[in-house]
Length: 129
Image (cartoon, rainbow, N blue to C red; front, side):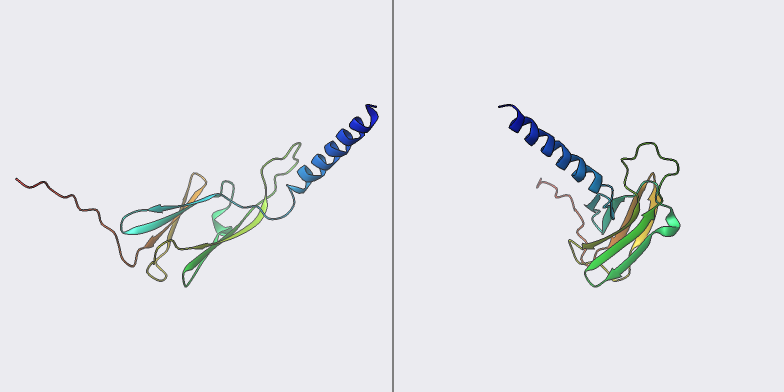
């Protein structure tokens, strides 16, 4: 009576192992955020271990594409961090000036600033006297 349950459990464990082995294959996707900087937009992309020379940035119309490569570790005994190439294309959340992107890489975070076409500047409103 327990054999069918055990057989199903073994089948599920085998499927789980197969899915986990697939996770390390193929391109990886670094996490990204858009931030509002009043006069500019900032794209923050987590790219630890990526060499600056492998990064590419391409602005086209209302999109920006970021690509790069993180090399595989040598003599790995256990690996959880993805490696290889990545390519992400983002649509600007607001209109920006063409070809205004300026990139910096610090602490494994790529920050690309784009000048807004219509900046939003917060002006404090004073109360009436």
